[in-house]
Image (cartoon, rainbow, N blue to C red; front, side, top):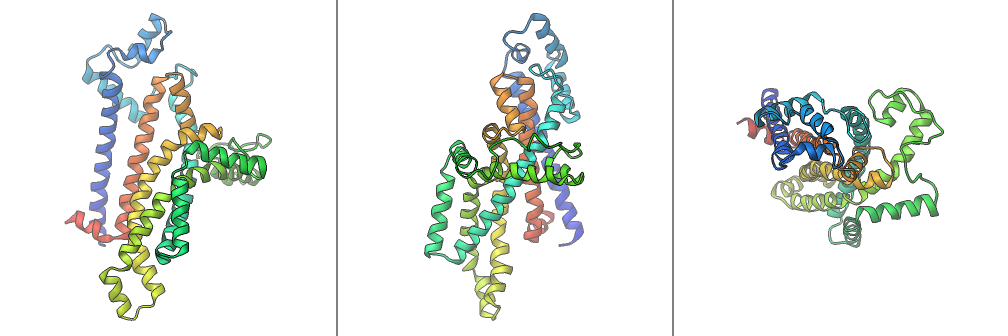
Length: 343
């Protein structure tokens, strides 16, 4: 793939991602400002005094024309100026900066587990098609896929924290340890940067159970897609031609079957990122994980609308960025995609 075609492909995808983000912001604005006849009363809370309602109206420019409100809304979103949380009194931007990295740590760990297990089992199932091992893998992923988040989490806590107490049931690290100074906001990474290995070990130990539960309940779809995709590729014309030319079976599977089969798995992985983000609302609450999901859960319970708006946009932007990364990975797995875009 020529560098020029790749840069053109990358520029198109970047412009598309920015356009989608603007669309998300406008959609959230319409829902929060237009569909509600008086957002100031809703955002200030049911028990707010008239002076507090008026303060919200002035802060969010709700007494100005709609185009002006949209301008200030977009400016606030992209500058990170979300105002003060009416429930906690803290800056909403600082709360998101605190909770966001914790959720990214959990979701990325879960995504790695999901992709490794999902692609691995999908590959094995395709290579052992129509055998007992293939049937066992299909039963396993269908069973975990059909299990609700809360049930899987409770089962894992009972098994690994109560009956076989080898993993903690909640929190991000042991409270007896001194946490590292935040640099990236990701606890395990900050512990590594500070060479605080006891804190890093504690962080990994607390991460295993929630990340694995989040992954185990979603890896089935990647397993199924990988298995199906590799079965299609395995019997395709170009793979048969490679075998006819005398290419060893291991090289055929590695260079042709696995690489082409990963394209569909890559698509699903990008979608999985969004599902995992939404799944954190339940998992973080059960495992007392201080992330955006936990923050969103408390904001919903307290009708904290000024906090819910940036949280919603945080989730949406996460999905858009994940799909952008997936598109870039496509171009490496199959350069014809980028070349096709360029032409």
